[in-house]
Image (cartoon, rainbow, N blue to C red):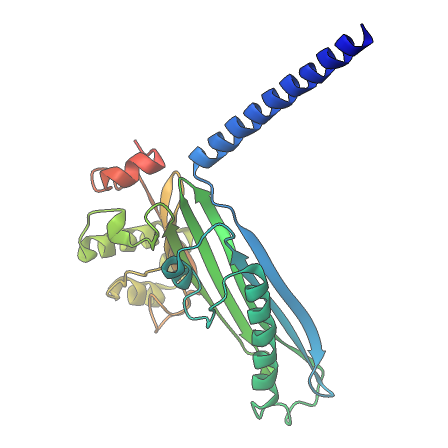
Amino acid sequence: MKYNYLISTFMMLLLLSGCKELRSEKKGAEKKSYGRINIDAVIEEDTTKISDSVLLRYSSKLLWFPDVEDEKLLKEIYEGKQISDFSKNGLQAYLKQEKQNVYDQMMNSGNLSGVKQQQQWSYISQMNVRMNKNNYVSVQYYENESGAENKSRYQYKEKVFDFKNKKKLRLSDIVVLSEETVRRILKLSLERTTMMQQIKTYDREAYNILSAVTFPVTKNFYFDDLNLYFHYNMNEIARDYDIGDIILTVSWDDLSGYIKPDFAQRMKIN
């Protein structure tokens, strides 16, 4: 009797375990079908005294895509960086070498000898995920370097990667519009911003300069469920009047009729 009870208990545990595995597999399948890409990050940070007066802060973050094996796509993701090993250890080794390179560059820049007051110089580089859905991943790249006289230079890059088709997305993959039409749309978007309305009210000369520019179409774009965004860096719109970096927004409703059907279907844009 006791023997039969043990067998029944064992069979019940197997049945419960099997149900749990089925639920886990179903949940995993649902997550996979949702189109989220598995992403982790590698970070290297350090602060080093490079002279009696200067501290150098280094901070860098790289995204890591553990399930991605397509080397061409990985090279596009890490474009501009001399990376050949895309494993987590490989990315960590790259950051350690980059930190040493930054340290050597600052040490040999010739700017240290003139610094008498205490200063902190910095090199910051980051990759951050803006969106991860429908097998699209939007990545923001940010770099900021400050050195002698506390002068700071920063730059943003925005890229969207299509993991279904294993490529970096172009604007022509999203909308069917001529470059001239995109220019007009972006210029109208700038005109609608609160900043531009304030410039129009309080600084007519600057407003006339910005209104007269031949509007550039930046390659820095990304999107979400509601809008398409264009991120402009300092002096990218007009060199004669600096408005800093600015993000211009164009709604999908404003682009109705020009959105490519396959893209609209994947993003569920009506």
